[in-house]
Image 1 (cartoon, rainbow, N blue to C red):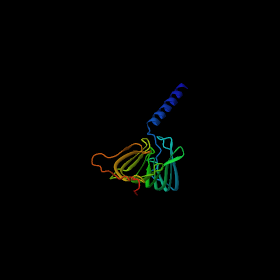
Image 2 (image 1 turned 135 degrees about the vertical axis):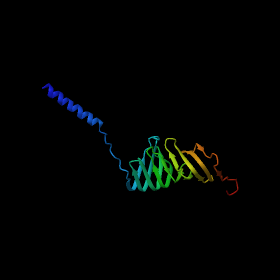
Image 3 (image 1 turned 180 degrees about the vertical axis):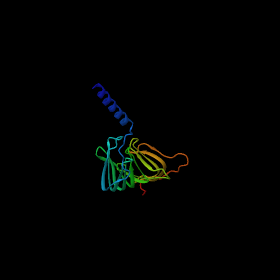
Image 4 (image 1 turned 90 degrees about the horizontal axis):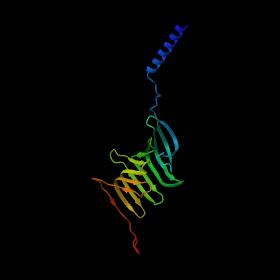
Length: 188
């Protein structure tokens, strides 16, 4: 009887060793995109918990293998804080990465409170980046305009969402600004 118990025990141990040596199979994530039409997307950035982003796009594609979402023809994007829209966003194509950052070749933001427009464009292989953790736009080439501002062109610009922190330029960059000044008794 003890002999059969030892043989059974040895058999179980052998099966467990074989099972431990067999490579485990991981679930394969499909590389194909999941496509949605007439998409309304709400983004709750983990690194900016007070903000909520809303997007309307005719086409949204989700890539499970990269954990990225690409929105086409965004004509109604907006960022809200405490239920109030602080800026709107339009773009031909925007990609939201796994860190909730937005990137694309061309985006247009409108700062609602200050009535400022920010036209953001890529340059070479460098894309426009909206960095959620830093709370800023990182733009290779930007044109900022507004009713009292005129047009200002900047390269390698980094500007906070509330437009209070601003940095632009660097070696070999070009920038210029045009300001509109009202004089008493004269038309601007």
